[in-house]
Image (tube, rainbow, N blue to C red; front, side, top):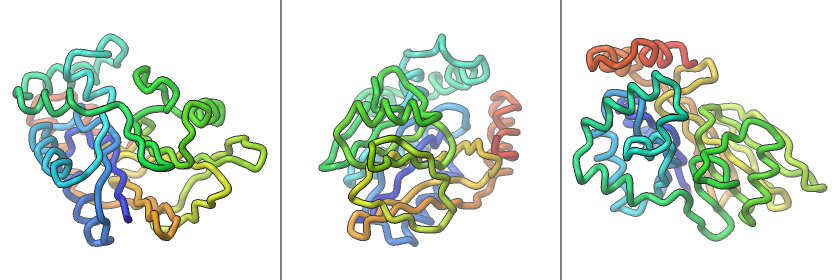
Length: 247
């Protein structure tokens, strides 16, 4: 089973379509969407339509904090630019879109794997895994050997030493990493729709269950088109600029 892990699409249709096409060329068997389908970008409806269709075909999907904000939650904690995008997105969601988002769980467990948007430690609190301390608490919150998340917008991995202490590893794009059965792994998939590691290329990860490997990919897409749509929609200019510079 080869699963493509896509997080933080953020209504970026061009990036989503590019990653899906790349994943299909890689021969994936299914998709897992790790939250924040919405927010920031100019194509919420089109992105939701694609994801909902794939969920009907067997894809996994969980809810993110921006998705929840579009239903009326967590807004006071967000930066004002993110709030502006949420207000804009709310006005463009119909009943069907809202029902789809509301029906998404915060986590999905599957054998030795857990899928979530933020940390497994209190998923409803949207905790960022930004260091080994947060990774340790995430591992402690679940028995899963493999934990797949988004939220951080950087492609990263944490693994446990024989003593159980988490260590950080920065993956190389396109290079499969063997996921040893003797360690636990917390995989941050990177951001499809709004990378923030200085690389504007879209990012997703591929978990090959049979081979026991994890590969992050960077996928070029039409950044200029996605940024232009943001400006044409009247969304904050900074959101367009962030796509171009990858920050």
